[in-house]
Image (cartoon, rainbow, N blue to C red; front, side, top):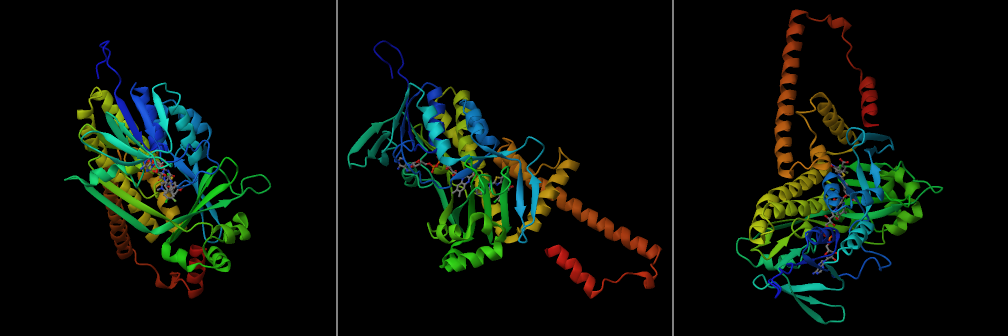
Length: 470
Ligand SMILES: Cc1cc2nc3c(=O)[nH]c(=O)nc-3n(C[C@H](O)[C@H](O)[C@H](O)COP(=O)(O)OP(=O)(O)OC[C@H]3O[C@@H](n4cnc5c(N)ncnc54)[C@H](O)[C@@H]3O)c2cc1C
Ligand SMILES: COc1ccc2c(c1)CN(c1nc(C(=O)N(C)c3cc(Cl)c(F)cc3C(=O)O)c(Cl)s1)C2
């Protein structure tokens, strides 16, 4: 808009949703000099006693760190996180096997969700061209005029106009509702049959109950638990289980039977009374996968974060992907001179394939882990990945390495992984064929003395199998 002085007044950007992505996005737009207003339905969480979150802690990896770095927040957030250099796989017998995430110095971070959100809100408020509006729930908005209607706790309404509306209002986005009414808007939503429940593992004599710099995993096919460390020396354990299994456990004794069968080593660490009490504190929570396209309407509105792509957490990438949305959008703003009519369609064109790829990957990993992954298979696959990467570092890069430790576009990481899988499978096939052919040739050329062959006895097989399953 042109002021009487001829000076251009900054365009107004409304960020709807002051969660992790909204708070970070507010910093990105404010840094560019826009007049930014954040509208968040909750009260200011920095004043709240308890913050109800979807997960108490999260894994922050490269993509998320790069996004934080762009607004000068990486060092502060990393300093408040706990490095996890490896996974620690817990077998049913309680055996613990570490698998490094990569080379020395390659680690992911366990960060506290509420603290991260608070830090980002506080950083956003340091910009003079920023206005925070808590207790503002978006009820409706018009794609034609950009007029938004917010309701307050006291029942009053606010009507707000903006040049650009950025929908960061999460998986059940109110902004996205207007998209659903439009022709050629694609939308899919899948609830998975598993739910999750968080349990706390307290310190033992003031120290972590388990080794702290690991992402602890108890892979049990249908069931799985993971544990991430917190700065207060507790672990937040997240139990993943089908809802119909959650519903079968109705008494404290049944909780104990279940944990004795699947997660016996955690019982003394979480505590019997705490398990019996906390298991019934909240029901298992649902996990949904949402994909949609395009992410924009005209030059007026764009969706980012879970509002655009809610993913199941089985790659630890939801927040990292949402944070990366902010960098990608900002890079396109730079390329196209902040011309919203060009930036928004280009953002959809570039970002939709990548966010859909990570949504598919996370769902694939959920199905894979539910079906095939127990502790032995998990160990085998990760060691195989790391071995092949060691052998052919520039040819075989594990998928999780590309996803977690690089900014390789998600869809290109999937393409590369599918190519690698073909190469490995062909290699294994040729290798096996070669071994069979070579072995047969040698057997024909030099037949063995049948009397000297060691035929495994029943007892030997039993011993072998007991070793394998222990
Ligand atoms: C169990 C679990 C584990 C996870 N682990 C990881 C992990 O390890 N690593 C990772 O990267 N990601 C993880 N995630 C995903 C991550 O939590 C989300 O991707 C991330 O929170 C998305 O941030 P967001 O800001 O887009 O949405 P949200 O965090 O949902 O924030 C949306 C905000 O919008 C506000 N809002 C909603 N509706 C309105 C409205 N109508 N008007 C105004 N405001 C509104 C909400 O109050 C909220 O503050 C996990 C998720 C779950 C469920
Ligand atoms: C707070 O709640 C949650 C819930 C789930 C997750 C996280 C935090 C953090 N998560 C991470 N996943 C990866 C990963 O790439 N893969 C393939 C894995 C996937 C699963 Cl399911 C797993 F158990 C281990 C790995 C692993 O490789 O360690 C990371 Cl790397 S971090 C999953």
